[in-house]
Length: 283
Image (cartoon, rainbow, N blue to C red; front, side, top):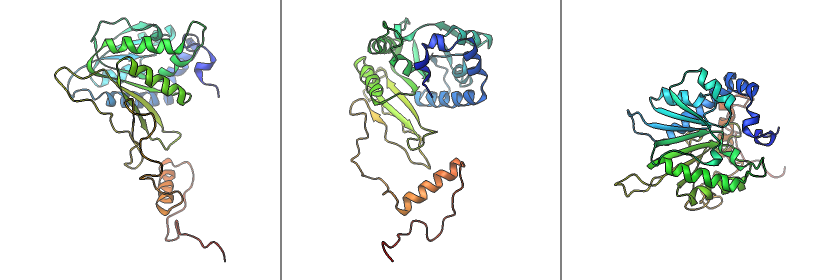
């Protein structure tokens, strides 16, 4: 199946029909709500305070509804006028702008307390027109976003990179524009549940000399993946094989069986004293 960004530019792909399909799908709405809630969680906003949030690629307002439910104020940007028309019909309490983020953001410095984005960032990596140079568009976007955020604020992007080169280009460009931070990969061992979040820090809050730390990723049965850092490398710094359960060992088999039980998509044999038992190499 082709990736949406390979089919057409976003302002064309998300036409009236596609915008309605995207908005009325209960499955998409549920996934969007979960990822938006997770992005807000990664922002680490102060409790019991209403903050001013920028929703980048707000679409029809699915993420904005989550922001409002959490008691925050927000501004939405999107390149699709069809998506924004649906958002206007919902009578959301937000200012909505039709804008190509690859051209940069035009907000005053320090306007926002945080920014979130769901399934948008990968579109900037696609050269759908001769004039659209991915590296230039990323630089323009990240530099103006850094300015629009107050110092110490965070920006969290859920995105679907096409390959490792795209991830590296995005990470290095954000770092050159002043951000620190890195990737938080939830459920890294699951093809269905795996989600990547780029968590960026716009400097340190005034009066604070402490550097911000990446939040822990969500794992399986209490296990967490080590997030990657912009300051080091995009790969897990642990040595190969260190603290890793040996493949085909009893613990490895039990973990795989428990994972399959939690997914519920296929039958799993019961555990017994023979589970993971080594077999003789010959009769």
